[in-house]
Length: 594
Image (cartoon, rainbow, N blue to C red; front, side):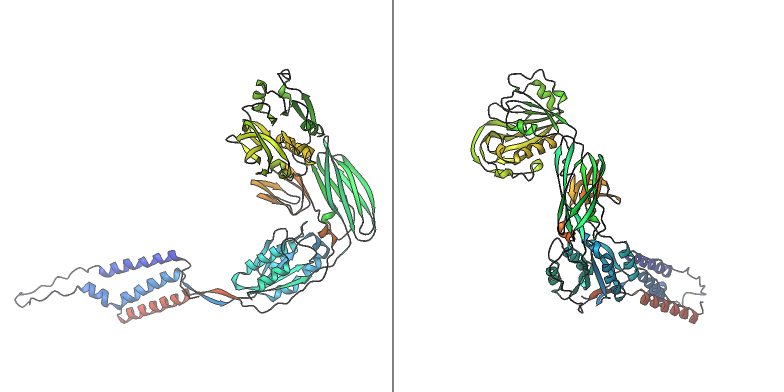
């Protein structure tokens, strides 16, 4: 790279304007002297000569010396420097695996790193977790030791390749060494060995894998699932023994009280723990002394599952059976045809379902403004105006379903439903379509005032009601439209990221922070925006502490390390100004003006 000369403080170049007053001082004409002549006959007429002042300005060496002093001081204050390619100092980036399995060998990992800290001029630290983060950038050995003392493991499996990539970015174009310290039990993302090959291909980076593996015996809660009941959840947890036969004391703690259990598990054996989880935070605790602490605790958060009142208007059908299977719904069914339900007070219901043969009346139109309505199209009548679609007859199938937005129907394989006839409909402006059949909306919704209306055309002539997903669809739909928090959504696995859509104050198991996304790196309960979620470490691969094969450590090689070196020129220019000042004093002494 060709050297250049930029300035650290370009604004100081305004000091060059100080030359203007200096020039003005030398241009000021001195007052003319008055000379008396006895006669003018001896004065000769001649040509005009150059001004004495201008001659003094050009010929006076003192002017040029003083101008040199002012310009030199101004340029020196601007901080001129050159940039050239030079040799970089030694730089080591330590990538420390902070996955849960590293709890079994954490002291050993820190011992492996310690001897390297004094060998390099600059140390950077990267913590490899579900997403890597920088602990230290280009610090000294003492700073690195302090950062390592404060580092802790997370209840996740680490993305080692992402950690290596971040380490490479910290080295930059200068190159250097990377030390990856891990037990190499499990990881997410790309294979770190393949990542090492790619990064070392250019010859600027050298990577060594330091194996901290120690193994150990471990008991862990590896899975959990929930079955909602009326106002509670039936929770089942799977506990696995990754070690010899053992007896484990288990504590269950929650709003329903505390109880103890004892589990006898053989080597590589399992125990299924079932209990009733009430609204609030419920905790499972394995009272054991094993290799990993994170998986000895599991959390179950049950949101408020208060009973909802539902009015079903129309002929009984599969939808009514699905609604009645929901233990948290109190369902009232009426025919709803020909004004049969006109005596019913709609305001006492959380949800009204309009099914086949029902005839909406004026009270429904008033209820829609602040209530919740599900309309099941049957093709037998013209749709009311409050629907998110306009109905215009029927269309023949079979039709291929396209899921535009899963919404509450996520994971239900809607595209596999056999649809043989369906209502011909056109979306209204402001509506949201979730599922289409040959371009026609068959599942959509919109908001009217404070109310919410859902339209479904999936039940006119289809096999949807015969599929196992059908009751789940109605369970999710009712919970979504009546604002019941989803039990599954309230209980997550560590390592996931929750995107909030806005910046909010978050309470984690160990701290409080402000962010727009939440990474679940710890097992425990998180709170934000008036809601709570629980995170548990369900990761058998990480809990097992077992791995197949060894690790190719590799060795550090000399790498080409170059960097951009700044050379400050200010001292040279200050020296020039000092010489000019000495010259000025010499000139003044010579003229006897000092």
